[in-house]
Length: 423
Image (cartoon, rainbow, N blue to C red; front, top):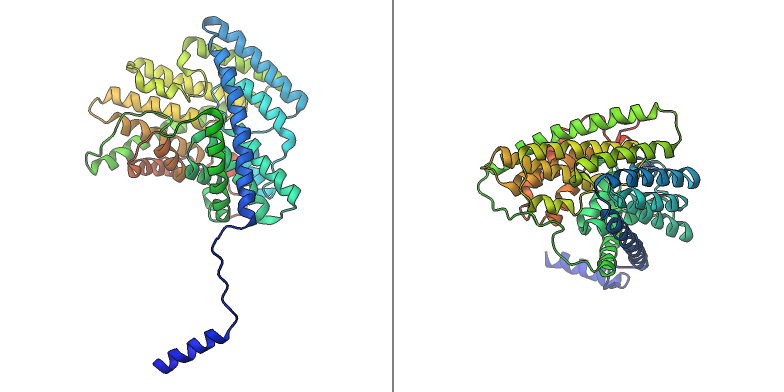
């Protein structure tokens, strides 16, 4: 035995000298870092401008909100008509999967201007989709300048997308995984080599974004404290998830039917966005809490004391507002608005069944509803645990998986669907 060991050692010593590299990072690490800094700066500037628009638009109340949003819709539609259609989240997913990760920067001006108007004046879509389009296209632009190919090219675009998600959500790991998972859960492993670039870029973007807007560390929303009572809470998480998935089905059905109706109308895009604006203004007039995309409004929900009737009306108003915003050509993302709907549903369940835990019901409904619509159960769990400070990870995962498995077979984001012939 000792003789055999000695022979092995002699072979090692006679071989080529061992090289010691103290760091895993290489030149490409700094490329991911630069992308994150650029994405964080872009997101920070976008957010600062958006907050100013929201500040001025919030001062417009009562009946005046109707002509304001109608006019904003008209102007956003004219921007899209003249400059070009930047597309929606479906186009981003399609480009990542079938165009090698190429997001054209030529659509950024139209996306930025139209989404600032749509989100800032009170539309029920958030800034996540515009930010992802812009930061993802920054990754594409850098890749083109450096002549990257194949998966390196696509990884840079995905890393840019992740940086955009992270800047808004404040959750580097959840934002990175969301950028992969929204493409389709079956492709997460295929794109796994993009996870490290995505995390590096996300951390850099979050740091720059936080510095620009003076963002503090901690939960985005102060959800009431929750303590695990028993293993039965996992069962309650599934029950809450089931109820939220049913609401998800209603939302998807209403939106799809409304989308078909709007497509049958032969009119320019600015006519549709203008009409959508007047409808959104009317909803906001009768239900002011349904206005805007829900980032600050979720906090107001947990601070208020609302009746069952009001919460039902608010849930219906928000569902309709999101559907109208999506289908009439207004630009933005629907992730935070879906979180808002889930929070309303959780509060409603608490009012109907006073003995249940409010934070458990609210966070589980938020998780399940978003997972049902976007099919992102893993990243949704990570995002909500970070954004709400809900440190008990497992109940959120139970609810997210419930929403995912109870989702309609045909996805809401149609480009998540498997191509014909794919198994």
